[in-house]
Every structure is written in structure tokens, then in C-alpha cells.
Length: 321
Image 1 (spheres, rainbow, N blue to C red):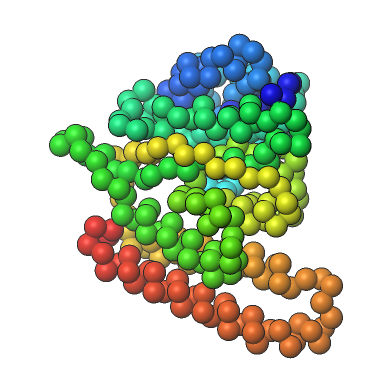
Image 2: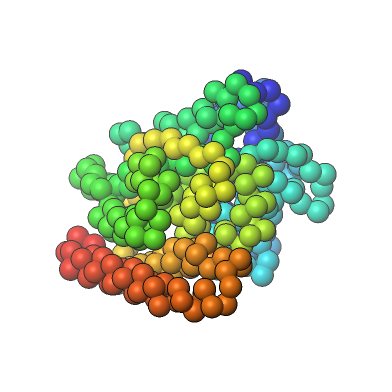
């Protein structure tokens, strides 16, 4: 095991509210107690998505200690999407905040706020989140340390009335669409090689070195950043590992046709744009770009056609909308 690896655990509330923060903190302090006692978990960070109202700030102040080891910070002017919240959480976790001294860390572990902490269901991710540290703790040298650990899971819907569950049809469909787009633009990609079912996962462990590179290269998209980060990190030869976490439960999620269209089109745009950034190398001469532009257009149009077909399948399914 590599000694002196420091990790911050961060979360990102979805709105300007304190709901879920105490449950998240209690869960982390209970389930990562050994790592906290040993100093491996060096700090806990809550990244609020927008400027926080005074009453919410007071509530957070009563939950979070406000020390270098445990603090909350706010993003300004505010988030655009999930990728912004993840990036903000990593930014604060690695860099601390201006009003206090910073504790340097090597990794940030992101655990989303919307886990139903303290109320686990069968094979719940709550039983397995410590496994995200295994690739770090099993490394025998710095060269074996991963740059990115992906927490893979099965998306579930829990029915409180009947105490039953089923797979979330929308999330299954949207992930299949994302994997189809990745296969189209990046054959033999890291998602297929590792067998990742949830490439847009909210559970991940990222190294400071990788975060600084993807952030500096503007590869951390405002929306759904993980597919893009995975492709970029793999092509730059960063070490990536996957951990199976079990099932992530939601209660009565709402899926609208507008939301479905938005997610299909934005993931399609992000993946195709990432492909074009690799294909449109700065080393290409202007005449080479002109010769290749027709081929590129055909590939992008084919990718869009696949996206429309996936969208039609989702909208036709009675269990999705």
C-alpha cells in the first residue's frame, strides 16, 4: 500500500438547500471512520451549486464545522449542469477556500447527495462505497495508483407502497444510447473494455493530476462530464479502474419527453465534439482539413441518426415517459 495518500470526500447538493447534507455527513463519518482516524480521509467538502441564501447558510453552519477539515463553499455565479457541480466540488476539495488554510489532498471522492443515506435497500450502493478506495489502497507503488476510479451501478426505482423495485427504464435507455455513441466515435473505447454500464456515473474518485489536466483542457463538460473525461483520460494513458457498487435507488423519478430529448441531444453533441477535437489535430494542414471535412460530416451525421433512433425508442416505450 502506498503511504500518505490523502483523499477528500465531496458532495454536491442539487439545489440551494441543506436537505441531505447531515445524512451524507453522518454516513461518511460512520462508514469511513477508519480512514478518517488514520488521516487518509483528510477533509469533507460540500459544494453548494449557487450563492447560498442566509437561512440556508445558517443551517449548513450548524451541520458543517467550517474548518479546513470540514467546510462548505458556494459556486458563483452558479452551475449550468451536473458537470459544473462536480468540477466545483473538485476545485474546492483540492484548493480549499480563501478564508482558511488548505489541506492538500491527492484525490477527491465524489458521493452524490441523493443517495437515501440510512435507509438502504437490497444490494444498495450504501454497502459498497468504501470499495471505491480499494484501487488506491491495493497499489504497491505510486506507478500503480489509478488516476480515475469509476463507481458503476444499476439504476433502480423503489416503490414504497408495495416495497418493490425495478430497473429505471429511462436511465437504462439513456446509458445504452451513450455507449452506442461512444462505440460509433471511439471503437474499442474504455467504457466497453471495462464493461462500464453507467458511463455517466455520479460516483467517482479522481486524482489531482488528472483533474488539473481535464479542467485545463476544458474536457470537464458542464453536463454529463464522465464519458468525455473517460475518453480523454484513456487516450492520454491515465490509469482507469471500475468498481461495481450494486444498486442506486430512486423513489418515483419523473421523466418528461423534454428531459429525454435534452439528455439525448446534449450527450450526442458532447461525444461528437470530443471526437472532432481528437480528429481535428492542430498538426493538420489546411488542405488536409478540407479533404477530411466531408468524411467527418458523414460520420457526425451517422452519429446523429443513431441518436434520433435511440430517442424514438425511448419515447415509444410506455415505461419511460
